[in-house]
Length: 346
Picture 1 (cartoon, one colour):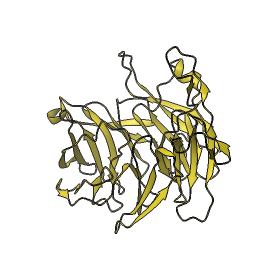
Picture 2 (tube, rainbow, N blue to C red):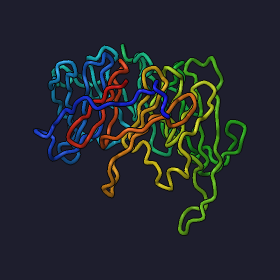
Picture 3 (cartoon, rainbow, N blue to C red):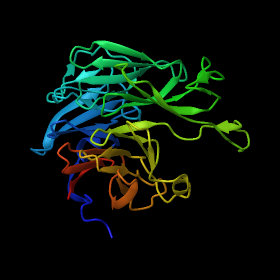
Picture 4 (cartoon, one colour):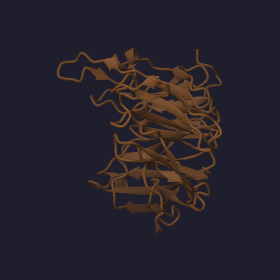
């Protein structure tokens, strides 16, 4: 029996965009920090991205932004709201006024996979070519002053903030580091790791390494990486980060909870995270958007994970891609091709 305290999503209404989105597909959604607005990202044409800002309180379109680049299909680019809800961007450079849709002067940031810390006062980005030694650039979002963190010659795949303003990075070796000692161990090709960095320099770097595993598939490399070190959304209330598919890592101890096994995923029992995931503001639950089945199976089943036990505690249907939670904790939004479904959380 499902615990009555579990917030079961109940469909409240659907925001239909068929009038101008009928030939395109919704990609991402993000609530403003004040919870009043919902930014909806979609691709109106090849290599283009548009953003509709929807006033949730008045139930009407606030603005429409035309972007010259394809931000929607790049999974590592999150739509970011400034802490005062007056600026939206995909991190580096291009930014807009969400109330009017007007372009704003570029910010001076560079890099990819930008993320904001708990209070929005700092933004990180990953700088360096894919597979090459990386830096983490940390910007003060008020005056754009910059701090650079060198990650010891390793290549950073993804990075995320912890609740304590430390930075977790998922890393792999480079030509400069493979077959050399790293964190007290010899780094081999296809090894991957997680490292916890303290930008203040007050705490030493913590690390977990996952040795490569044999890959006996024909015509493949003889080794492959053991786990996915993709770090996605942060749970600032409980100091956790979603780790790849099926795991949550503690931002202080680096302990890992596994809520879906590889067997679950390979056997097609679940299709987790394809459409995104988001933590509840109180940190107790992780809502996982499964993504649509490509063979037409219905309904799509989404999951609710208890972040303390690492157990699935509920499931619910709805949507295709994109998931966001209102900072007030009372509404969950899910993208559904040409519309957004708004669920109440009870």
